[in-house]
Amino acid sequence: MLSHDIHVHTIISECCHEPDATPENYIRLAKDLGLKVIGFSDHLWDSAVDGASKWYSTQNFDHIMQIKDMIPVDTQGIKVLIGCETEYCGNGKIGISPKVAKQLDFVLVPISHVHMKGFVLPSWMNTPEDIANTMVKYFKDVTNFDFITGIAHPFYPLGHENIDGIISCIPDDVFMECFSMAAEKGISIEINACHFPSIKGVETETYNDETFLNMFLIAKAAGCKFHLGSDAHSIDVLPRIIKLQKIVEDLGFTDEDIHPIVTDNAIKNS
Image (cartoon, rainbow, N blue to C red; front, side, top):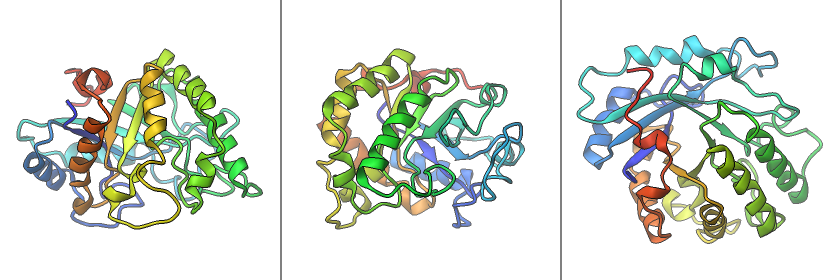
C-alpha cells in the first residue's frame, strides 16, 4: 500500500491553475503509474467557522464537493478518497468543524503554511527560531483535534529559504515529543515530495534530501503511521509520487507503517 497518494489538488483549489488537473485525468494517470489509492485534498475553510482569509472564504464544503460530479463512474480499479486540506491558525482556530470533517474521507492539516503571514504566522515573526517554535506549537495543538486524519508536509516551512536553519532549531527530543503525541492520537504523518529537493528536481543550498530523513525516522520510532503525498497541483507533478515511494522504501518503511486511511475499504463518499 505504498502505492498511494492522498495529497492531490484539483482545479477546485484556488491555488491550482492547471485546467487539466481534473479528477478524471488524475485517475487515468494514477492507473498508468500503478497507484492503488488516490485522495483528493482540495483546500477548504468551513463556512461554519469564522475567520477565513479572503483567499479561503470561497473554498467551503459545498465548493469542494463539486468534485463528486467530476469523478468518473469507472475509476479503473483505483480507490478514490475525497478529503481536504484545511488550515490551523493558532489559538485553537482551525478551518473545519467536526460536522464537516465527518462527511469527508480524511482531513489534512498543515502546521507549516508559514508563508501565510498575518493569517497562519503572526506578521512579526521572521527568525528561524520563531518559525521553528511556531511549527512545534501548532503541531502539538493540532493533535488535540480528534477529527484530524493527518498532518500535511510536517515541519516543511513553506515560503522560507533557510530551511536547514529552521529545522536545526528543533532538537530530536522535541521531534520525538511531537510525534509521540501524534502516534498516541492515531494522526498520520505525511511524507511529502516537497521534503526532498531531488524529487522536485531542483538544486538548492537551503536544504537537501538528508534534512528531513532523520525526522521521519524519529516519527517511525515514536510509533507513527504515515501516508504519502505528491502535493500535486498539476498533472505533471503526480509522477513525483513514484520517486517518493523509492525514498520511503529505502528508509525501511513497509505496509505496516501506513495509516489505515489508505488500507481501510470504507469510503464515505463513494
